[in-house]
Length: 355
Image (cartoon, rainbow, N blue to C red; front, side):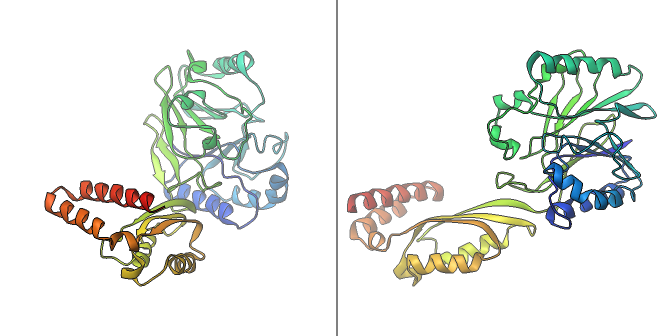
């Protein structure tokens, strides 16, 4: 049995890039011959978006060869009243407790504003619905507190403010016969943890960038039940950070350096561009202002953000003291990276001395 697992699409409008991402995911499900397409919360950004988009969603979810299983997230928790129809192949596991496919049972644990002991009790109560003779899979939507001990922060959960959204720990699943917890709510990247019993807890990340914090190529989780989760990279809209450090001694015109870096960006990316370092305006035949304006013109329609942080050091590199320093660096025979580091220190020191 094969499952495609995603979350946090946050649909708002018909045929926008988020909608097109959902269509692409359904195509991906067909191409990979999945049996289940699991959406672990926040399919819609707001409840009124669900109401507006429902007719089109019904069409999408009635023309697949696989089941579409959905749970409510914190953004769309009131979008799935009992009896509401989301397509012939769709089922909301907030309304029905589980579905079975041979030796696989899939349960839903939708978002609720519960915390602490009450949440622990609800998670442990899932044990009554788990089967020892089956592979048990749980869809859930909330904050795994364990991730805050590592590289992640509240910013990784989208624009959620400072509130807590069904915060739980891996230890809450202790003693439960769960093979997979397929989660949603964490946006920024694909992340896999091990459950206390040896199963897998998986955040797939958002399949399309929702905020500028979702940087890099997006992904979903496509896996065979019984095998580890598998990250599948997507060609969907996303933000990409491009940082360029200009070097006045590199022999490359600063504008050409910017062009070269932008050409290497992913076709579906919206670039967050930062240009720092130094230029020699006399050698490059371009002023700071003209370079800034030309970069803005070059990046129009290609960049989500552009930050200018470069400085003109024409007077410094032409200074006899700096030339002497540069010649000594060349004579020292030190490796290129070290020489560049020393050169930068020398430039900053001379800029500070000239203030």
